[in-house]
Length: 254
Image (cartoon, rainbow, N blue to C red; front, top):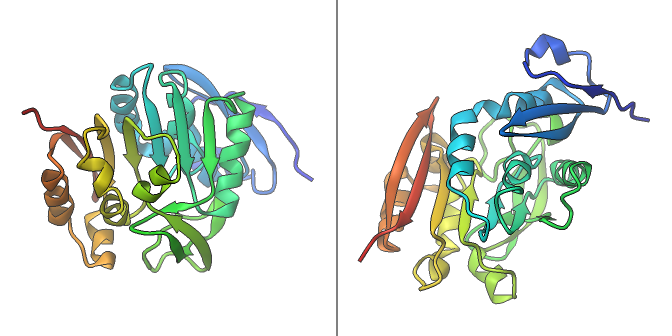
């Protein structure tokens, strides 16, 4: 049985939350607007109160959204980007294949009364429909990945679909796509080429590139950038964070 406690901490240190294991806690955090999230470990507290260490990327992301945007949040995790973006867009589809993390995303959406704005889908986004093995230790572990990064102790079978297939099945086409899937970004982009080459292509792509993890898919940063170029996108900005890059890409002007 979980105990719910409201903790309005604005500053995170791991020691502050080392005692939270098994206690389902509501924390409040502010990034332009105040939102609430459930936490039951120091890992979740870091993802919420410290915004996963991605404050600058989150700020740029929110700044460029428009009221009439439809956002696809691919690799939504516990819903941080989706929930903060909800005030700035028309509709959001969030994709998270891990069952525990998907459940938490849904809980956080409900906690903020955003059920009419955000739809959480328990599927991964890849190159084509099917199933793949997801490396994950659930809600308290490292971010799940379709690649074998040797940092997870468990694997689970998860459903995968592609961007192009989901649109062909009737899901509303995105005007903005955010991708953060630990190296599998190349798979998501390969499965979205019909959309990215169409006249209805998204006006913004926010992609977290993982050069080291891309090698697990026999890919590279160069291949990602070349694929974007072949779809007539140009990189507007690139920001390094540790061993990752946050890039923003827009359609090339004629």
